[in-house]
Image (cartoon, rainbow, N blue to C red; front, side, top):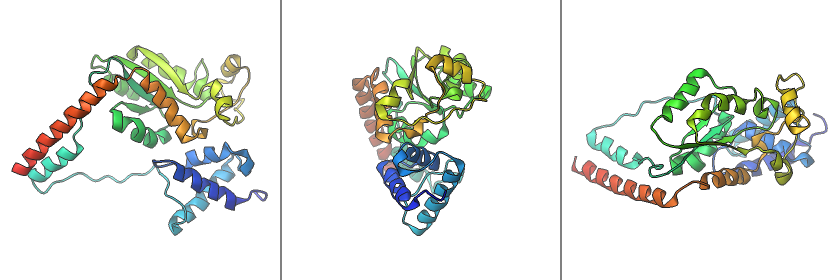
Amino acid sequence: MPNIKWPPIIERAREIVLSYDVAVTLRQLHYRLVSEPALGYVNNLNCYKRLSSLTAEGRRLGTFPQLSDLSRSITEEIGFANTGDALDYLSRIYRRYRTEGQEIIPVLLVEKATLIPQFRAWFAEPYGIIVAALRGYSSESYERDIMDRLSNGGRYRALYVGDLDPSGAAREGGIEANAMRYLDHCFADWKRVTVRYEHLAQYGLPEGEAKTSDARYASFVAEYGRAFQTEVEALDPNDLRALVQAAIDTDWDKSAYEVSLRWEEEDKEWLKGVAEEE
């Protein structure tokens, strides 16, 4: 990588991370940089490793903002000093089902777990809707878990977010097609939110080379006329959020949502009163 100028790349990387209002993964940062060809950053393993090394060094020195690492976690059980302490905690975390009263409930299905932190903050937490990461080709047990969560008689609409490439979007054998095959009966409707073909020109998204060895290569070419791969992470976070928000708003009953929030606050006040009596 002798011709790559890393100082301006790292400075741009810093700006990208700070443009998010939630944690960003290294993979997301990588594809955002790939989407800006003027930087000279290349979509290959060497660039990815060098970016990882330089940003890690900057984070340790305090010169680069923190990134999210979804591959590691710390587990600690919640404990309380007494029942009053527990009730106070409950009053702070209490939430009603914020989808109550919705005629059609959106469910976000995403191809990759890297999108979960953003989607949890943007959509799951405020609206109480389900966000499920398929992580490629989902297992039978995971499909069963999703179906069990959707078995309460509600009407659901699948909003799918995934890459536009042979493995993800091929009509025959792609990740989305596979999910639709086993989960479509759970939903009243299914919509691919992004990446869609028209988004390539609309948002100036980069097109990488697709693997000719991919078993879904021919199916993808038959549908799109050529082979390429475009990652969700290449979208500006503001554009990604706006696309998903617009899809949610299509069926979302704002009046029912506001009623649910009001009842939630009333319930929390009652719980606080009980905690104070302990």
